[in-house]
Image (tube, rainbow, N blue to C red; front, side, top):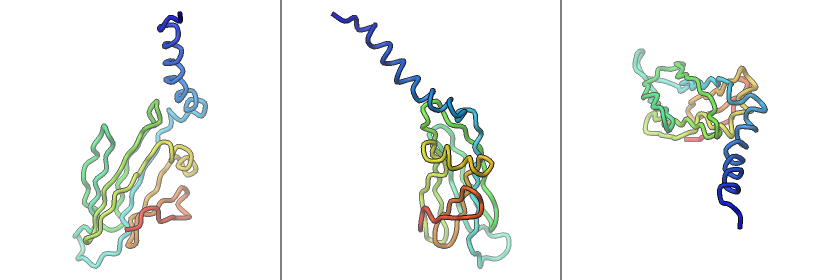
Amino acid sequence: MVDLKQFAFPMLAFFVMCPLAIAVSEDLLFINYHIRVTNDLPSDLPPGVPSLHLHCKSKDEDLGEKVMFKHEDYTWDAKINLFRTTLFFCYAWWEGKQQYFEAFKATRDEHRCRIYHNSCLWSVREDGIYFSKDSLAWYNEYPW
């Protein structure tokens, strides 16, 4: 009969080390990713009156709510965890419109955000929330 310890330990080690081996092979665990969300909404509000509300957080860290003026940035850094489950999500609202979006998702962004200085760039606009991996081409990933 097979000893459970002899069978279970190698299987456990495999499932724990496999994601690490994949990530370490490209040094993805050690990269500091920069996430930037910019308020590019039109504003007919008087000067000094913010137009966008943004609240970003992860499972473990609440970055807080930020009330943003036109062209203001909300920035933070993130590293990918051992299991590549790092996720930062945001909730944006502006003039009756609201949208949830994933600002950084390890399995989606670990490669696409490395193109431009390890940065994930987001722009909140009148018709949605746009993503760019290079600050040149922008894609509306989350329409209002």
